[in-house]
Image 1 (tube, rainbow, N blue to C red):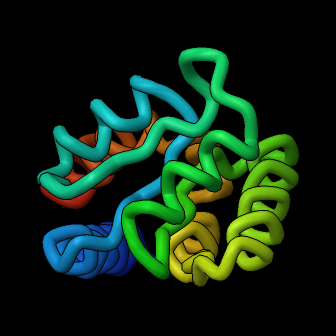
Image 2: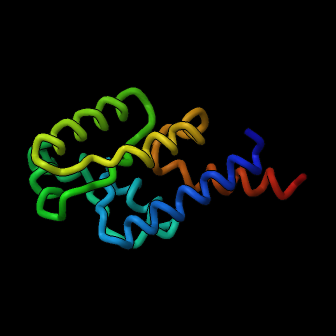
Image 3: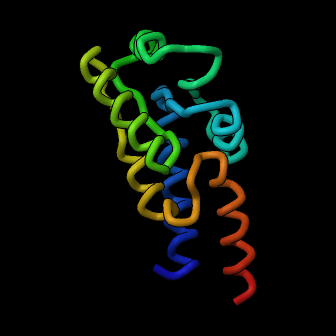
Length: 135
Protein backbone atom coordinates (compact mmCIF):
# COMPACT_ATOMS: atom_id res chain seq x y z
CA UNK A 1 0.00 0.00 0.00
CA UNK A 2 1.46 3.37 -1.00
CA UNK A 3 1.67 6.31 1.42
CA UNK A 4 -1.11 8.05 -0.51
CA UNK A 5 -3.35 4.99 -0.32
CA UNK A 6 -2.60 4.57 3.38
CA UNK A 7 -3.49 8.21 4.04
CA UNK A 8 -6.68 7.96 2.00
CA UNK A 9 -7.68 4.78 3.85
CA UNK A 10 -7.14 6.43 7.21
CA UNK A 11 -9.09 9.54 6.24
CA UNK A 12 -11.98 7.43 4.92
CA UNK A 13 -11.94 5.34 8.09
CA UNK A 14 -12.07 8.50 10.22
CA UNK A 15 -15.02 9.82 8.19
CA UNK A 16 -16.90 6.56 8.79
CA UNK A 17 -16.02 6.63 12.50
CA UNK A 18 -17.27 10.22 12.78
CA UNK A 19 -20.54 9.26 11.07
CA UNK A 20 -21.13 6.37 13.47
CA UNK A 21 -20.26 8.57 16.43
CA UNK A 22 -22.66 11.26 15.20
CA UNK A 23 -25.40 8.61 15.03
CA UNK A 24 -24.93 8.04 18.75
CA UNK A 25 -22.62 5.04 18.93
CA UNK A 26 -20.23 5.47 21.86
CA UNK A 27 -16.53 4.85 21.24
CA UNK A 28 -14.62 3.07 24.00
CA UNK A 29 -10.99 4.11 24.34
CA UNK A 30 -8.44 3.52 27.08
CA UNK A 31 -7.63 6.97 28.42
CA UNK A 32 -7.89 10.74 28.25
CA UNK A 33 -5.15 11.14 25.60
CA UNK A 34 -7.00 8.74 23.31
CA UNK A 35 -10.14 10.82 23.71
CA UNK A 36 -8.17 14.01 22.98
CA UNK A 37 -6.76 12.42 19.82
CA UNK A 38 -10.24 11.52 18.59
CA UNK A 39 -11.50 15.04 19.31
CA UNK A 40 -8.54 16.44 17.36
CA UNK A 41 -9.57 14.19 14.48
CA UNK A 42 -13.13 15.54 14.48
CA UNK A 43 -15.01 12.96 16.55
CA UNK A 44 -17.79 14.78 18.42
CA UNK A 45 -19.87 11.97 19.91
CA UNK A 46 -19.68 10.03 23.15
CA UNK A 47 -16.25 8.71 24.10
CA UNK A 48 -16.01 6.34 27.05
CA UNK A 49 -12.73 6.08 28.95
CA UNK A 50 -12.24 2.48 29.98
CA UNK A 51 -9.04 2.67 32.00
CA UNK A 52 -9.35 5.95 33.89
CA UNK A 53 -10.70 6.95 37.26
CA UNK A 54 -10.32 3.49 38.77
CA UNK A 55 -13.20 2.08 36.73
CA UNK A 56 -13.48 -1.68 36.72
CA UNK A 57 -14.45 -3.63 33.63
CA UNK A 58 -17.88 -4.19 35.16
CA UNK A 59 -18.31 -0.43 35.69
CA UNK A 60 -17.40 0.27 32.07
CA UNK A 61 -19.79 -2.37 30.74
CA UNK A 62 -22.62 -1.13 32.98
CA UNK A 63 -22.05 2.44 31.82
CA UNK A 64 -21.90 1.52 28.12
CA UNK A 65 -25.01 -0.65 28.47
CA UNK A 66 -26.95 2.46 29.51
CA UNK A 67 -25.84 4.26 26.34
CA UNK A 68 -27.35 1.78 23.91
CA UNK A 69 -27.13 -1.64 22.35
CA UNK A 70 -23.88 -1.17 20.39
CA UNK A 71 -20.48 0.36 21.11
CA UNK A 72 -17.30 0.83 19.10
CA UNK A 73 -14.14 -0.49 20.74
CA UNK A 74 -11.06 1.50 19.76
CA UNK A 75 -8.26 0.69 22.17
CA UNK A 76 -4.51 0.42 21.69
CA UNK A 77 -3.10 -1.78 18.94
CA UNK A 78 -0.39 -3.53 20.95
CA UNK A 79 -0.72 -6.94 22.62
CA UNK A 80 -2.19 -5.51 25.84
CA UNK A 81 -4.66 -3.48 23.79
CA UNK A 82 -5.67 -6.58 21.87
CA UNK A 83 -6.28 -8.44 25.13
CA UNK A 84 -8.29 -5.51 26.50
CA UNK A 85 -10.35 -5.28 23.28
CA UNK A 86 -11.24 -8.98 23.44
CA UNK A 87 -12.11 -8.76 27.14
CA UNK A 88 -14.29 -5.71 26.58
CA UNK A 89 -16.00 -7.35 23.60
CA UNK A 90 -16.76 -10.56 25.51
CA UNK A 91 -18.16 -8.69 28.51
CA UNK A 92 -20.22 -6.29 26.41
CA UNK A 93 -21.69 -9.15 24.40
CA UNK A 94 -22.62 -10.95 27.64
CA UNK A 95 -24.43 -7.77 28.71
CA UNK A 96 -26.38 -7.64 25.44
CA UNK A 97 -24.30 -4.88 23.83
CA UNK A 98 -22.91 -5.47 20.34
CA UNK A 99 -19.16 -4.86 20.44
CA UNK A 100 -18.11 -3.24 17.17
CA UNK A 101 -14.45 -4.13 16.54
CA UNK A 102 -14.52 -3.22 12.83
CA UNK A 103 -12.80 0.16 13.20
CA UNK A 104 -10.19 -1.19 15.60
CA UNK A 105 -9.31 -3.99 13.16
CA UNK A 106 -9.15 -1.63 10.19
CA UNK A 107 -6.99 0.93 12.00
CA UNK A 108 -4.69 -1.90 13.06
CA UNK A 109 -4.51 -3.15 9.47
CA UNK A 110 -3.78 0.27 7.97
CA UNK A 111 -1.59 1.82 10.69
CA UNK A 112 -0.88 -0.80 13.36
CA UNK A 113 2.68 -1.38 12.22
CA UNK A 114 3.52 2.29 12.81
CA UNK A 115 1.02 3.34 15.47
CA UNK A 116 0.66 1.47 18.75
CA UNK A 117 -2.14 3.52 20.31
CA UNK A 118 -5.09 5.73 19.46
CA UNK A 119 -3.30 8.85 20.69
CA UNK A 120 -0.64 8.32 17.99
CA UNK A 121 -3.08 8.46 15.07
CA UNK A 122 -3.13 12.28 14.59
CA UNK A 123 0.66 12.58 14.41
CA UNK A 124 0.86 9.57 12.07
CA UNK A 125 -1.66 11.23 9.75
CA UNK A 126 0.31 14.49 9.82
CA UNK A 127 3.50 12.58 9.00
CA UNK A 128 1.80 10.84 6.09
CA UNK A 129 0.47 14.17 4.80
CA UNK A 130 3.95 15.69 4.87
CA UNK A 131 5.50 12.72 3.09
CA UNK A 132 2.74 12.56 0.45
CA UNK A 133 3.02 16.31 -0.24
CA UNK A 134 6.79 15.99 -0.76
CA UNK A 135 6.27 13.75 -3.76
